[in-house]
Image (cartoon, rainbow, N blue to C red):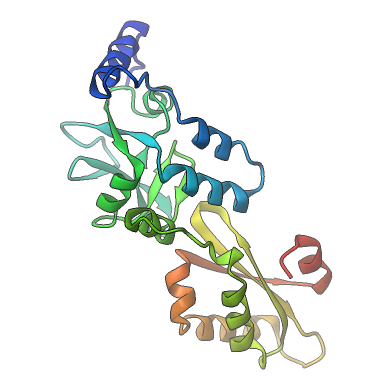
Length: 235
């Protein structure tokens, strides 16, 4: 694809402006920008979902889907790994045209997009980088407040109960990449159990925890030494 000329970018900005009564110049929502500037992954994801609850985003629309991508009701979805897909959305005209220079930008309220996304991949991807996970997308669509798994102390306590008798001393949780929730497990070192067998059994048990399955898009089990968990702030 060829990049847009300055003249073409100006025409697209004018189109956006007309579609929003002269108010939309294709710039990113200030609250979305503020959320994206947060360096820590977990707080960044929480702030982003809160900002998207009232933000406008832009969709790339094609008469025909680009190669290696899929469309469903004009929504472009992209592969985000591990067999998962997400609806592509962008914070600004500049971000959209950087990835899809030939697409037509269509403004939409992020919450409305989340509702449409539930009928497809049930996830969204902002600016090609920031995954809005399945639970977060569902919360946006339903107008609910999203409680990330790594901020849910009751859920961590439930997970701790499930694995307490198999050689795991403590449990923590944190945000992982691409919408993943990490369950951090401190293994007991004096029971003669192999770390692999403990992790496998923990995985089997956690898959039966409906609350955890609902709260997480994808779960990654991470065995740790006790001091590492303490340093991570996830005790």
